[in-house]
Image (cartoon, rainbow, N blue to C red; front, top):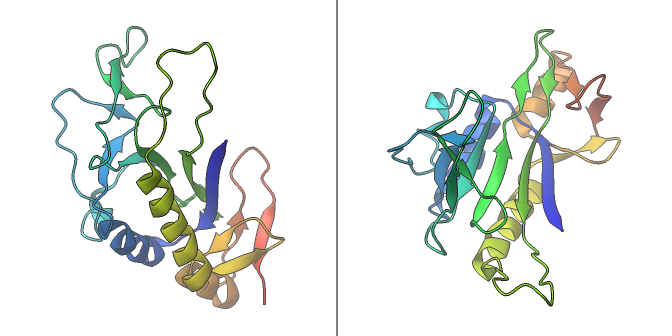
Amino acid sequence: MAATLRYFMLPDDERAFFRVLARHELTIYPEIVPIGWEAPRASDEVVASLDRDAYYLAAERFAPVIVHTVKRGRDKGLLKIEEVPSPVFHYERSVRNEDGELVGGRLWAELDVTELPAASDARYKPSGLRAIFRDLEENLRKNFRRSDPKGFWVGPAAARAWKSDGLVLREPGHKGDTFGVWR
């Protein structure tokens, strides 16, 4: 079963979140990896150079990241990360849409890989990946505010902008609902 954290973060919140990620020595990969990619370490200095909406955060100290070559389509010849066997989190950024609304992001990880009795190559996630996820979840609980209705964490800068500037917090997806900040 996948573990998911959903949030609204402005750039200041994202920099603070990446300072927490830096403690865990995670590296950053794009969703489609160019051959020869040198993965930077996650830190608050890297946030300014992130230009895509989603990335993988890899805990390579536990196990190597498993990739395969894309065989068809416009990304033919590039590398794609295998999410289930690799020690990675899928990080979707919280970005503004064309209307200026802040669209929610999420951090997703497959932490529980079930073993099928007939599978000879059953793979398990390292327990350290679960510990990192728990630490990130605890950090959001401690520093972020809950959304109203429940379901998202709202960063301090996003909560201030929602309250003072009327920033609209929008759920991702077609016709996503709007959210507020609880209390």
